Length: 251
Image (cartoon, rainbow, N blue to C red; front, top):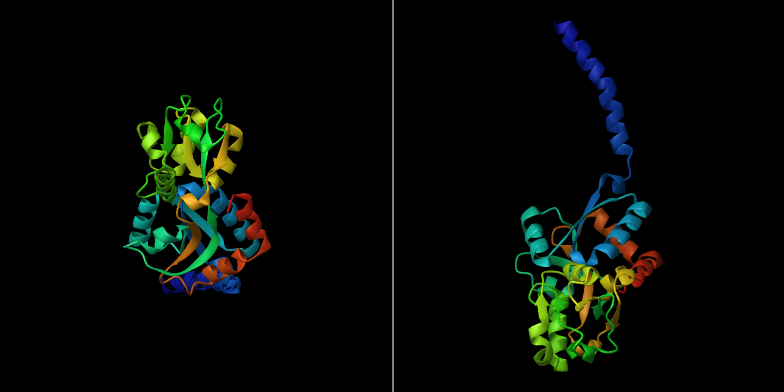
């Protein structure tokens, strides 16, 4: 029996040693992984960034999307999310998550979009007889819902179309209603408008003076700032390739 056990141990060592050498020989980036969380309205640019970054760096990127309130709740509970892509003001005011620093991603821009079969020459047309339902994201938890509400109040349109407004949860939900024709118009970000351009009637960009600036950043979760993957991501974000992706998506 003893000789049998010794034989098994010798066989095990033949496989364990090469395996250990293989792992130790891997670049640090290949052993690391980066979990990125983002608001659902930024799925398209974040997905493209993640794929390009993964291809160039060899670092595996995992992605998580949803309502920002839910996202931050998950970040607070899990401890695995390294960075969060979203509105800086919202992230700075988060009560349950701390960020060590913010990496710039671009400026968010509010637009009003309309379904196929409709046409808006200007934002005043929202008060016209052809527009009966106008969707907007949650004004409390979604930055573009807040921006849309600010625009409506500052432009004086809220008093004229208030009964037509249909609050929903997220930007993608507004986009879905626009594509299906369930609403005549809706407030979304330019990023989403670009992504669904061929499935809606069109969009108009809202004057940025009529809502608070939307500074889109990648917040580094406290405790993750020493990660080699985060450092690699920061370097990548300064590249021409990353900037081209963000610009293409309206940031």
